[in-house]
Image (cartoon, rainbow, N blue to C red; front, side, top):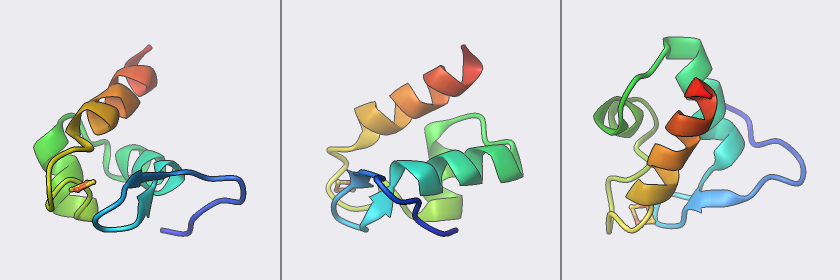
Length: 62
Ligand code: FES
């Protein structure tokens, strides 16, 4: 997964950006937080980004 320009980091612990999460969600058709954690490692540190990661999933579903 490649970070896009003007991208923001969603998971500070792992340095994972929003576009990387979006790409993973689309590519592997991820449906929940645990799948995002498994595929990207985002959210596997301090857990502070879990709300933001769930919001990315919700935005995709909208
Ligand atoms: S900010 Fe994502 S695990 Fe810490």
